[in-house]
Image (cartoon, rainbow, N blue to C red):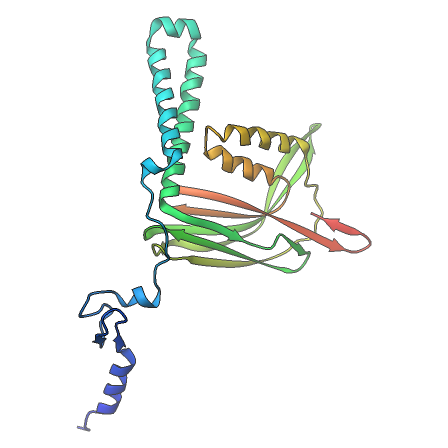
Amino acid sequence: MPPEDTTAVGSAWQASAWHCPGCGHCNLLAEACEACGVARRYFTDPPLGLPRRPALADLPSFWIGLAWGAAALLGVAALLAPGTRAALGVAFLALEVAAAGAAAASSLLTALWERAFNELAVVAPPHAAAGSQVAVTVRLVPYTTLEDVSVSVALVDRFYRRRRGEVELATHELEHQPLLVAGRLPGRRATELSATFLAPYPVTPHTDVRSEIAADLLGLAGAVVPALRTAAANLREHGGYYLEVHVRAGFLTRRLHRRLVVYAVGDGLYFG
């Protein structure tokens, strides 16, 4: 039997050995320091200096959700009271309970999202020439490690068309790319996912004044229903080419829209 190559074994140990920056102990193979117990990953990929994870009581959306929940319960009590039911009407009270219940649910889900994520950002160029490459980056920073997270991004054309004498908004998905499927996001660390799209040629109509008015009304209502602020921001991004990011973390979901102005120079200057 040939003698064991101790030089190769020693080289392997040296390659895997590491000194703990915290206490100086030399570790051979362990992924956590044998002396102080701190994980090696803490030093190679240190956590960000984020504030503490907010409690539900620290979030205004949580208290707004409770207020809407109380309004829904008052509506149910009014429905059960014969005198109030006769005075206000069943239809009115049923509508009040449904609207308040929906507002309460959306506000509480917003609070849970704000407690889960410190940051969700989409980085993309505001404009691009037709036929050029468009790079999109989604940055996610959760407070704690999250499992079962899915992220996707799509290039969508939202245009206006006439049907039966009325103008309506139509949507056509030009391209869709999944970036993460049922994956894991490390807590208090930034995860960046990227995709690349080909900018289309602008050929569809992308403006309508009624969408601007509806977005302004939703923006005002967002003062009492936090989820409507996101809806108003998305509605302001009305017709045009959009990068639509969909993030799902368990039962929590969030969609973000980023406008992409596409231009082309030919016999004239075209925008979309």
